[in-house]
Image (cartoon, rainbow, N blue to C red):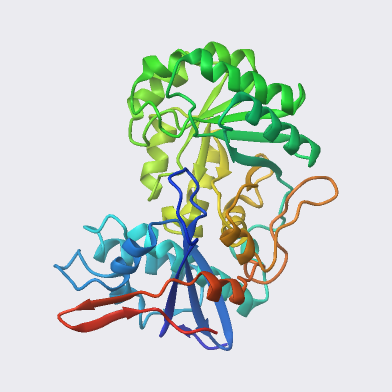
Length: 395
């Protein structure tokens, strides 16, 4: 089988007609397609699409401030190690561009998808796993605007067969602790006594440990399984202090990590109990797998971060598919119409309510080309009158 020479990488910027000022990252997306040997590999970046498009094509400023395109085009890929080496090259040449890991993530995921299809193996097997263990999906959604709305969301999730639910963002943490308690009480009543309940504070307290501590009695009373992202991702001392003060409710974080070291620091110094990694941000599937391996060694539970499409969900499951001890997976249930329509194939919950990594070659999820066409945003980037990016054609 011949080497895959990367000659064409297509970026598709898709967006809902109206973008709302809410914590829903599924309202737009940046898809990546790499074609070779009659096959297409697909990936998805968790990013601000226009910023990453600029990162893909930006003219060089100096030796470590170069476009992702300049490092990727012309490279040859034949083995998973080649993807890792390419990632190192991209990191080095784009060291001074903060968006680099986000942009390359989609490319890296698409390369794994392509290699899996060429080898006729699911991506998790290319990563060295022999078996994909079932994961318990948790219904990931935003808090309701009122406690009554939160109750209804929890009840609906329970009626849909979810054994675990996570609520996040909304007004949680922005007012009095008593208001937050009302939402947690409502969520617990809607979910029932036997369900897992998680809370995502969405970095609302910055690095203010005292504000987070005020919520601990309520979190404990309502048997919240974890408190996610109470602080910004690099507030390591704050994470460590809160973890020490919260023996009953473990602390989770890591979705904002855009390299292995950021995740490692949260484990080593932040003392979190759950590390949540987004393959669309950290640089792709390979770096996420490295974090999963490190977390396992240090008795920290790896969990995926996914709030968009099932392409992103499939990519996020692969790095820990073969780790039985890591049994929870984030499962988006409030994705936008755009994200739902893009799911030409879905990772459905099985009769037992569990989710498993796809056994199909590659990632096993193909985007819906009609949906891409429907939501495609026409973009042209020019420098000195020369077009350096324009929206690619389909198919």
